[in-house]
Image 1 (cartoon, each protein chain N blue to C red):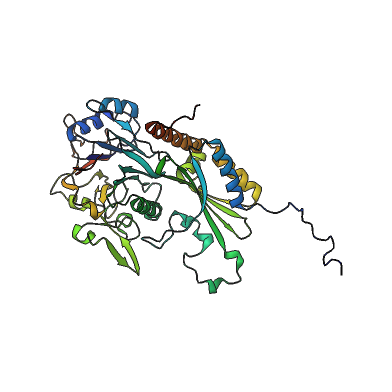
Image 2: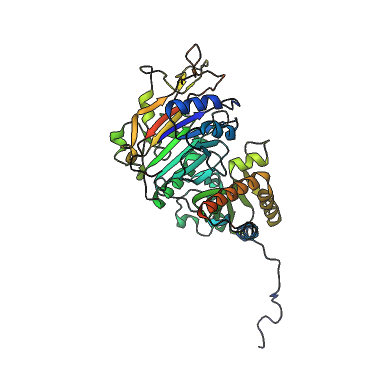
Amino acid sequence: MKLLFWNTNKNDVINKYITDIVSCYKIDIIILAEYNDSVDMLCKDLSVNSKYYKYDSPGCKRITIVGHLKNLSPGFHNNYCSIQVINDQMILCSMHLPSNLYAGTNERSAIIREVLPEIELLESCNRTKNTIIVGDFNEAPYEYTCLGADTLHGIPSFEDANKLTRTSYNSIYQMFYNPMWNLFGDKIFPPGTYYYSDNSMSTPLWYMYDQVLIRPQLRKKFKFESLEIVTKTNNYSLVDERMHPDRTISDHLPIVFEIDDKGDNY
Amino acid sequence: MESVFGEKIDFDNNDSVSFPIDILNKICKKANDELRGLVNISVNEYLNPIVSYERPSLANALSGMMGPAHVDIQDDLGELGDYYSKYDVVFQSDYLKNYKFRLMFVGCGIAGYPAKIVLEKGVAEDISKDSKENYIINIKNEKDFENYVEAIFNSAAVVKIIQDIVNATRRKMSILGEDNTDE
C-alpha cells in the first residue's frame, strides 16, 4: 500500500501533478492538504486501472483523501484531522496543523492532545497498533509538538521507540517512531519539504514540516527505503531552477511511503 | 399541630433553572428525532483521558475556570463555586462504528450559569470569520445558552457536517443493503 501526502498550497490546477505522482509511484491513497482543485476530476483522471474515490471525512475541511481501496471507514474527525480506519486493521491519521501565522506550538500541541486519546481509543477498539500519522504539522521533528512526550512523541531512533513507552515525571507515554529524521541535511536532496528564507538570526531555511510517524509496532511493515520527498515525476519537476519548491506548483514538496500489506485484505 | 408549613410551600413553582445539560439533552433529542437514526448526537460527561498523558486536552480552554486537573478536595471544601461540570457534544453514527466528531465542550458551575462553550474551531471559524478567539463563548443565562446552542445547530457549518455524515451513513447502509430511508 503506497501513500502520498502533499500540501498543494491552494493551487487550483494541481491535479495534473498529483496524477503524475500517482502514476509514477503507483500510489493507492492520496492525502492532500490545502487542496483547491476539483476532486471529482481528480478521481476521474486517476480511475484508469481501478476506480478512485474521495473518502468520507465529515467535519474536516483541511484534508482531502482519495484512493482506490474500498475498506476505509471514517474515525475521529475535527478541523485539523481526519482519521480513517483501514479494514479494521490499520489507523491512518491525516493532519494539517495551523501555521505560525495562526497558532504557535502551544496551540498545535493542544490539538494533538485532543487527537491522541482518540487514536488510542481506536487502537483499543480495533485491537491494533498499526497506526500512521501523516501530514503537514507546521513544525519540525525536533520541535515540541512532534517530539514532546505528551504530544506526538516522535522518536528518531527505532531502537528507542521500540521500547514502546517512556516515563517522564511519573507519567508513562507511548511513543511513535519518526523516520523523517533520516532525511535531514543535504547528503540526499532535498534537505526538507518546505523552504523559507528570511532575515532571522537562526533559521534552517529548509523545514521538515511534512512528516509521517508510525507506531514502532508497524515498523516491520513500513518499507523504509520507500520513504521519499518527491522533487520530480515523469513529466514535471516540483523544484525551480534554484532547487527550491516551485511555488507556481506548491510551496511544499510531497512525501511518499509504502506499507507492506502482503497478507492484509484491503 | 395540624401542619408544619401549612400551605406555605408551593409545589407547582416552575421557575427552576434549566441547567446546560438539560438544554443540551433537549436540543439533541429533538435533533436526533429529525435525523431518522442516521446520526446520533449525544451529550456526555467529559473526562480527561489519562491513557498517555495527564495534561488536559483541548478542553484546557476550559481549564481557566476548572482549575488544575488534579485537585486535592481538602483544599476546595466549602468552595462550591469552584465545582464545575464538563460535557461534550458528539456526532456519531451507528453505521460508521469508528466515526466521531466533537462539536463542543460545555463547562458550568453548580449554579449552571454562567456557562462556557468551547466550540470546535472549524465550526467556529465558519460561523464567525472575524475573530480568532470566537471559539470560546461565555454565556450568562439559560435563555442565551439555549439561543446560542440552537444557533450553532442551525448554522450552515453544522448542517454541512451532519449532511456529510448522513451521506456517508447512507453509502455504508447501501453497501450493507439496508438503506430504506426514502421509503
